[in-house]
Image (tube, rainbow, N blue to C red; front, top):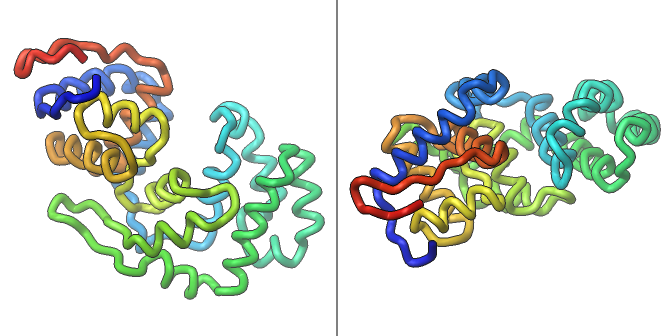
Length: 238
């Protein structure tokens, strides 16, 4: 559908159909409620490391695979206590690998814990909140420096850095294949900025935070929901 311009009616119909696809899933609904209340200034050291680990372990794996092993990983990583992870690195690595045998991902979480231990939580918090602002819709907007800092860690990169920051309270849309495909189909183009503009436009139309919008749209795509329609306003077949 390249070449289409975006239409607010189309976006509202997309939102309505996406909600219809996910509202029977209590897990997704609970996540949407959490996204409404998240605030980066309230994030703790445990919150931050847990969200980094969740993003890293989910990269290229199914939600079901990781969630089934999550309690074991949390125990192996001392409930995401960076100091304890650094004090018992070899035991942590061995324990985590017994739960999920991916050394690269396990070492990536340890690397972040080591960085946190070196900087101290106050130092990490300075990086995390550097340049934080809120836009006219109440969305928390991070600075480019925060995104870049996270991108440079192993197994994070551009998409996961935004996913982690979203789960830490920033209103970012993860530019993965699902959201990029939707942004392009609805006339916003491709790339990180296009995905963010797409989610922010819907956010303004439905009076929800970007994080809530991204959660609903991503899960509707993940469920392979049927969201095709013909717009009564612009006539586009979506």
